[in-house]
Image (cartoon, rainbow, N blue to C red; front, side, top):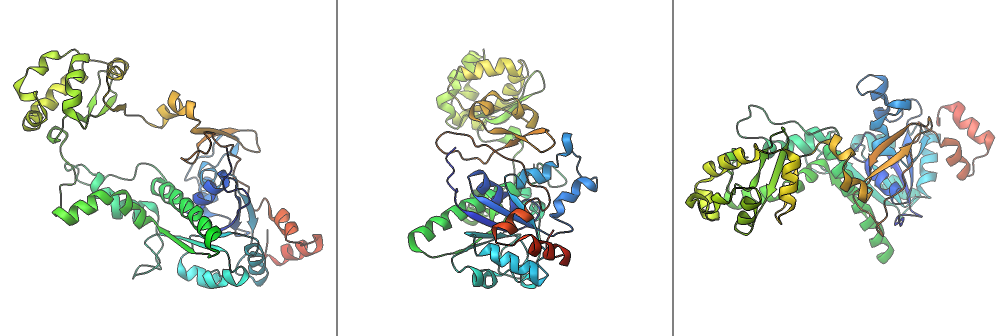
Length: 404
């Protein structure tokens, strides 16, 4: 794959998934991404396996470290020490991008605010990811995607009206991955701007803003028309062929026939129910809307009469847009996924292999080659050598506790 970020160096002082995954996207695109970790604790996400919160995969794979950190180099630096901070600034002087998700108090304490980093490199692009933004009464608060992205923006809209509690986020790092990809795009835009103008910018993204962007149509609609129902019972949908139905073998099919009059005749004919064409309740979109409960009921019975495999053959004969409802296990074996190289195999030092979803962009129609996440401080010596530290100087830093 064309490495659009080759020659770009990113210095990352960040933890968990949301912002580190932006670094991984850039690494996938060819950037040299240096992950700064505390010499003793490292990224706290490394501790999820040792604490038993997530399982260790075959060969010791920590999937919640691999996901947002593959392809990087790791250096162990104690930024609270003068020596560790000096090394950070020396690295910053060689970098194009500084990437962090530390809160304002932490950035101030560690002397890694914009002015601190730009004192070492005036041309560096400074990038901040936050929970709810850099301004306002909550600017100093931390957040996770389950709070700032999901609970604050998405959960209410995603919850069916008959639920007593909001639905939970569908899996770990859901909002983190969307936000991280957004940050990566912003960085590339900032690099282009710097190339064109010579001006280095400050780039900001927040989980709250990302969640609002994802639900922007509903926010705009609420502003224009007032509060709307969060969701409708499935037999009350305005268009019965924009709905999900259960098959005979317990699977689900989602129809998205937005132009229902265009697809209705073809669909019911292929499905073996041409009699529905002459039913006055269903003759056109207006009639189907008026009799939507009856229409959904008929389609429920129809879909329950055939398996997913049978429906796949029937629906593929038509032009209407549809999809089976798939889970992660289905996607791991999906022919379309494999044909496009959306899942990549990565081999770790132990020889174990895992499959990971690549960043959702390809260049020149080529999927990327992906390398594993670094061990804690794996590249400390290598990076210090690149900065000009000889063996004795490196040893002195290690003995002082400034580096791992």
